[in-house]
Every structure is written in structure tokens, then in C-alpha cells.
Length: 312
Image 1 (spheres, rainbow, N blue to C red):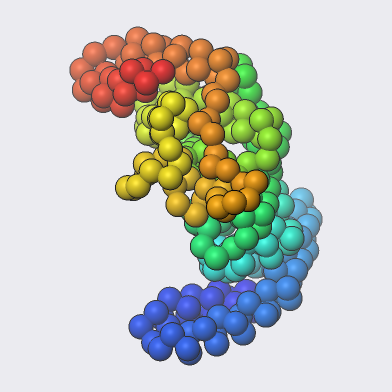
Image 2 (image 1 turned 60 degrees about the horizontal axis):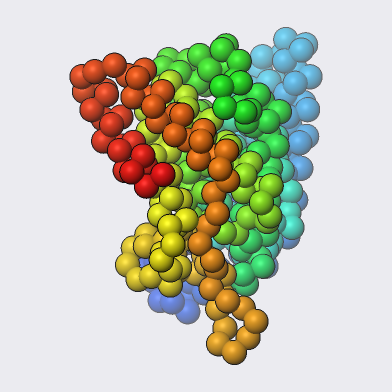
């Protein structure tokens, strides 16, 4: 019940959009001051009730299992609403991301875990410090890469086990999970690439993106293509991160490093995409064109991959 109440309270912020700004600011300030209590409570609920759910499942106690599962579901639902507006630094310093990554390996709760991650990576930097924004997105990318590697998804191109590849395919047990996961990976690469710490983290994200690009399931692979177009555009000399217009460059606007006149801070340079990454991308392009034979499927694949091939 407490988890449901926390969910409803957070959702009330949307109701106050039509109310006076001062009232909403006061309400938001009151909620923000409680984050350091709410997040540990929800994460503790997740841990305690997951342990209890596993125990009751092993003992065959269906009623108790259902009760503990409902608390887990309610806790993840509450987190999904709170991370939409909680200051980024407070999310980073909590165990919310760790908890969500843990539940990605749970068949019953993995989609809800992805829902929380989705709310986080869909956020844009507003008045947060650049370091706080980078810390949150880098932590999300690091945990996502570690978990997908543990699950056997983050592998070198062509190395995914056939059984897992089939599970991510049409009507496979991981079809919906794969599409939601790919969407989150695309958002991280398309919107927050420059926030990631170091070449290793960025290369890991590109490798995960390639996993989905090279997958034979067309709706999964084509989901990544606009992101590749944007990455290649950003790596093209002459693409300034200060360009105007929507999606002019990767992470446009406040998601770019700050630039201060007269300081040592400079605009970000063009991206450098590793050669092996581009080689794998081109291989995936031609494999896809070959694999999808003719007809409408091939036309769709060609239209989506044509721009990528041209830019690469």
C-alpha cells in the first residue's frame, strides 16, 4: 500500500501543471526533500520481497509468492514515476539504477526494470550541473553494459548464441524485452553519448548497438538505424555541436558540455568512431540487404540503411 501511495503522490505533479507555479514548486520541494528516505525504502522493499518471493516459489507457496510479487511490482512502478523529476545527482547516489539492472535478469520483472531505466535515459539536462548529468547517464550505461554482458547479449558481432538470438526474434520469449532494451540503448547513444566517461564506455555502448543492428529480426535491427545516421553525422567534419535546429547534432542543447567564454572549456570535437565499429556496421548493412531478399521488407531495409551506407 505504501508503494502505491508513493506512486500516486509522484503522479500528482502532472496534475499541478495547470495550477499556479508557486504551489507546484512548493509541492515539488516537499517531495524532493523526501527522496533520501523514499529511495532507500523502495529499494529495501525490492530486496526483501524478492528474497521472500524466491523462497516462497521454492516452497510452492503460491499465495505468498503473489503477495511478494505485487509489492515488487508496486515498488518498481513507484520508482518509475519518481525518477522522472528527482534531481539527477540524487538518483546517481542512490541504489535505484543498481536495483533496476538487477531485475533485468528476472523474467517477471525485467520489463518494469526497463521502464525505470527508460524514464531515466529519456531525461534531458535542464538546470543540473554537467557533472551530475554525466554521472547519471554514465552509471546507467555502465550498469546496462555489465548486465547485458552477464546475460550473453553484449558480445562481439556474430558471437551471440543461436538460442538467445532466437529468443530475441519474432514471438521469442525475449522479443518485447529486446525491443525495449534496444530503444534504451538507442536513446543513450543518440542523446547522451558525450556524457559517457571514456572510450571504453562509449565503445561498449556502440558494441551493444551493433548487436541489435546485426540481429536478423527486422523490427529490432531497423530501430537502431536513425541513431547510426546521427552518430555518423556527428563524426563528419563541419558538424558543429552549436548547430541550430532540432537534432542538428548528437546531444544537442544542454546535453552538450558547457562552453564558457574565456575559460579552458571548448566546444566538443567531432566524434571519432573506431574503425572496427564502422567495419562491423558496414558488414551488418550488407548482411541485412542480403538476408531480407526482396519485396517490401528489403525495400524498408534499404531505405533505412541507405543513409547509413552513404555516410559511412
